[in-house]
Length: 271
Image (cartoon, rainbow, N blue to C red; front, side, top):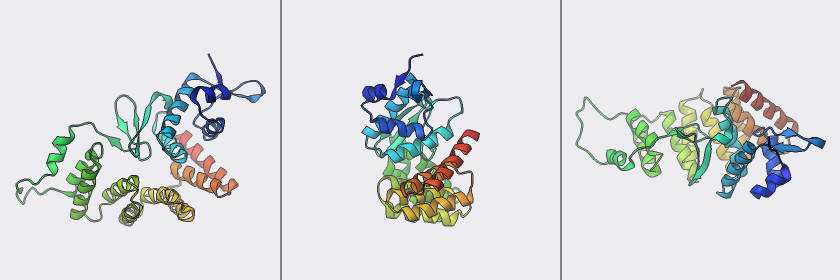
């Protein structure tokens, strides 16, 4: 089998060696060791790093790439290598494609292929339905999930319609918050994440999303509290451990960072 050194991979991909080593330290690549303990990468590893570089070139922040890859590693079967997926930036989102389905690695939410125009027409005013067959909040929520693949504005509208009917629908608040988060409207995103947390106090996902939002907004103390709340609700929330580890590391809390990295790795391996 042909192996590539760190220098060769860096030259092939025009990717800094420190960036390559950061993916190794994060556990996404497990290259063998050659003489003098030098790293040796397989062709699959090079393909994986090429994907990571493509995301960097698409202006996806490196910390977001590491976070998404951590989620992907948890989502994939144990025998499936990340390099077998096509991972690309679609506007502000990152999409994973395995040849059969598309989904967002950070949320695990699947995206659907369909004729967008036909779906959007469902949002146009229509003759009133009989009182015995009203449109439900779940109807608008399901439609919003489908619309996310092609029309984010219409998806937002559908989530709002769901919330007009059922104001404490936690999943609608969570998804709507994520759409605002992705579009950079952080105040609106925070409001909906908090509403989701209030509506579903036992669900760690709204706290985790708040942690990501605060992390993106350069509010490390708030992000730390949110991640810790998510872990308190679900001690096996690997992504929360991993993100909190990254945050602790950036704040200089090396020992605590290592503890959370170890917890995340253990949970990923036992999935």
